[in-house]
Length: 161
Image 1 (cartoon, rainbow, N blue to C red):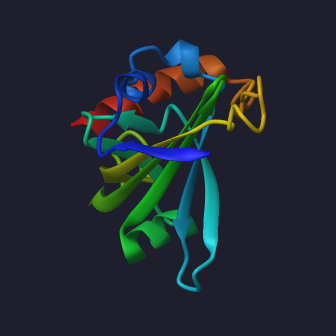
Image 2: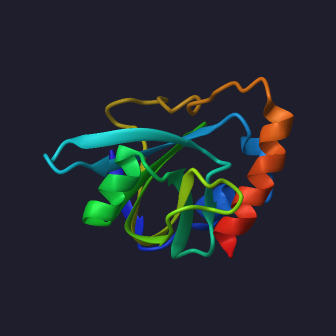
Image 3: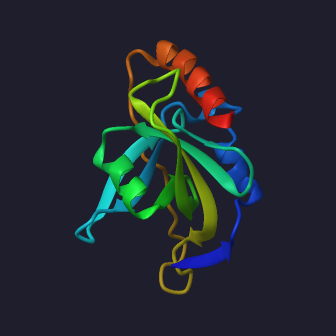
């Protein structure tokens, strides 16, 4: 059951998204959702190498500039980030502004700012599901992880500019 916890990133969320410990989050994925012009939810996956908290009110995102996801954000200016990890589930809702149609470090990505408007935390109802918890987040494998880490440093630095 989700509950509203505020209008800015908590200490835990800010730490998860601050980009300082890339090795810790190298295999983790963030689910994002937009809404298309027909009202359908449109999920997409980003790595922690494409999302960084500038501060507690602003999260920067690098998304393929020609994707439906970026188009949806441009169209209605909204995004929800879903952060799922061991014993932690958060929904971060925000208003999107495109800062650049193409990034220097990754020209195929648009640079977007998400101004946080609402943060929710989700956890099982202890009375109905005693002892239940989320055991892990979504992960992925990339055989070129070392090269990906180097690229991520450039992307995240540019997102924070």
